[in-house]
Length: 436
Image (tube, rainbow, N blue to C red; front, top):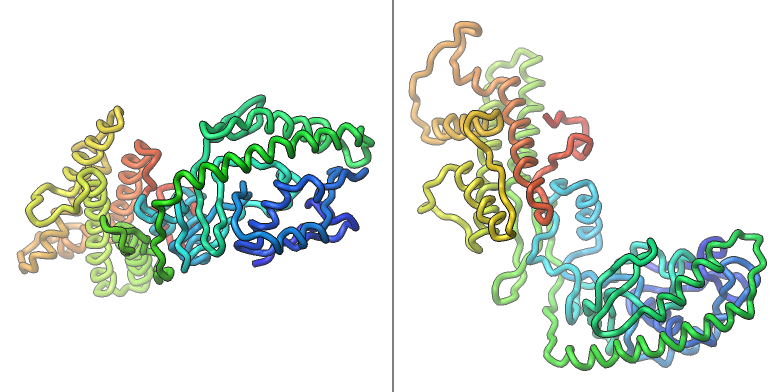
């Protein structure tokens, strides 16, 4: 998608017209020239007091083949733009809306990018006036080598005088960013009708581009040093459902993980919705059937959560030889993960509502799955089987609520692990269906 810089809130051409930035490598070429060449920038008497020589910019772009650039974008790979966008939005909601990305997804490029599936992610348009496209700094640096793209981790963001800036062991950005902050303080922060000292701005811009040249030279040298052994893993973006996340095996081959915790949780929610509809219509047979499968799905979801934690802790999935209950696996693995981080874990304990409800779900589910037609008691209130009571609307609602609370209890203790299901009450993602 092409991005344009308009007159009102973007750096514009000398005549005030928008600058066509383009996409992919075209955008990176524009950004590089704007960081490298002082003569492309002109001081202008109207806010933000800088404009771009568009003709000179286009001429210089045509000459570029290999170059470093501190882009406003990040290179994303291995997934389609649609899948990346939906998972990014889901993460802003706290996770659990979809399968998200795992540690093995390698979606944000670190090294040489997937040549078949890559794109630039811009949180903001490249020439927005709140940014500094005339300043060669970032915590990431991109290198363009013909049609190949590389992205390197180049520093960390720190805060100085309430403004974020890059700190890097590869280049001292301090002089450059001090100059950047002068522009922001003495020019950008002025009102639209202000008349600043433009000759001083000319000199400030001269000093900025002296530092830019040093910064780009250091970035070029860094890339030449680290890139010779870098190779890309080139493949087409896989087709993902909302329950799928991309990953890679130990040899680097692309794979797909399925978040069964999420799939079973949403299935249980749909079954609860069906229980409510069938019960209100007096369809006891259908309400019972949906109740059984609601409970089965809740049991499967908590077991999937536990198995995922086992995998994160041990590096391999549990199999039939692991005889622990789901809650035992969950607590053991979470405690080990916390210990490895030098932290403590507060477990789910027998006697609290979350533990007791989910453990009862395990016991009842096992009786269903063994498919033994064992006799059950008659509920004295309903005169129906106690199994029907176990899976009625009220109990299924409680199972789902305790599942959500249990997952929240565990994953709020691990800020680096996204919850596999939605745990926040204020997130609406499932339409009008009730989420206990």
